[in-house]
Image 1 (cartoon, rainbow, N blue to C red):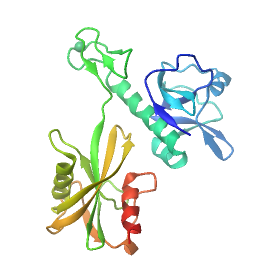
Image 2 (cartoon, protein in one colour):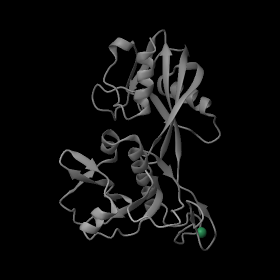
Image 3 (cartoon, rainbow, N blue to C red):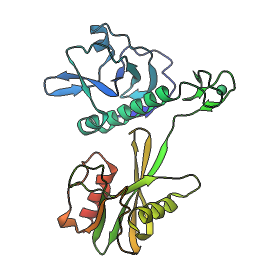
Image 4 (cartoon, rainbow, N blue to C red):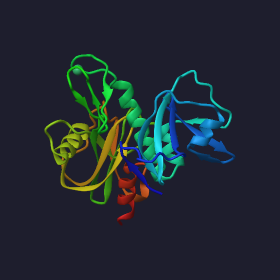
Length: 270
Ligand SMILES: [Zn+2]
């Protein structure tokens, strides 16, 4: 099971393809009893559905993947169920999740970058790469990608976890924030932790990464050690933060996220 992201479709057409169809930002999945799967070309034929516009975006298990955005009033066939992308992350294998995430990411880009941001004319899809080009002024526009750091800060065997006013009740996670122009990833880790809870960190190490298409982030995971200061929440991004030992962790994010991978790394390192 592999997914390869590419903008170049196979030279010989392949009859059967995976269709990642979004309607009002929810993905269509085929429900067969308890099982769910991504619609295939044959499913579309059965329902006489021709998606309005489609974008080839990669190969999954040797089959082409297309993304398309359906009209809001498109009638939903009986076997189809709609799913939020976050639910898809919980229910599907990682390669399908990667493909569905990229489909959602690219469709948002198509939706939001239809016109040239310099001269206002309608953009066209560039033929040789995944980009849009303005036919009037030539400005090229690539899919937006917003890098963000996420960091597990450890102090004497305890993990720094915080809750945002946006989180469900009793839910805590590691700190995260968007990278700003001109800063290194390590600068960003130091700045975000200090801005949000007034803690200084040291020994920053890369941990791993995860595309996070809500709507267009790439999460870059780090671990760090406490270097100084006492917790003082900023009151905006963070309403409460504390140091938690591995045997007394609060409610944390589900297994789909790098946030949880970082928390599990801490809980299992002994
Ligand atoms: Zn232009």
